Image 1 (cartoon, rainbow, N blue to C red):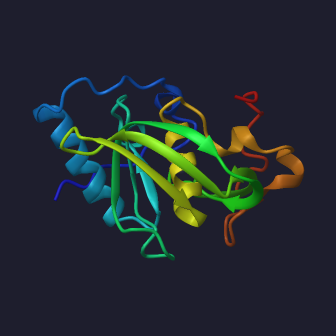
Image 2 (cartoon, protein in one colour):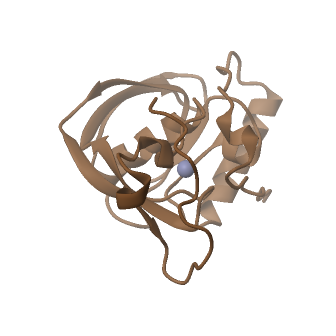
Length: 175
Ligand SMILES: [Zn+2]
């Protein structure tokens, strides 16, 4: 196991635009292993490489501990190629654990990329898994869920028990 520390907002590393994976070498394999280990030992349903300090386009999603989905999904260089109907949902992030927010996401998506062996993958996803994939793909472009809220005041919420600053941030602009 190599569980990594998850970077916390406002760590500027979370704003990196991550590099594409060009070959699945020893380093990339290690990043994939670290993402898997870190995700499985955390309460979240998804994790991206920049959250453990690696600016490469690798994401993992596993909603099976919440509901549905296909189990652990690792995608390299993910690109969302179509978006279904939009819906307002409540979202959180392992890098911003004190807050949740209302964010508009597609209920279903089609996404392509590479699997961890470097094979082309194209798949359809819906529900929580589709939402998690959109959230993790955003991380690769330095976009956080709080950037996507319509109003920091109306749509961002402290988690129960958190008494710290509010709101968390100035809006970083819509992307
Ligand atoms: Zn996140």
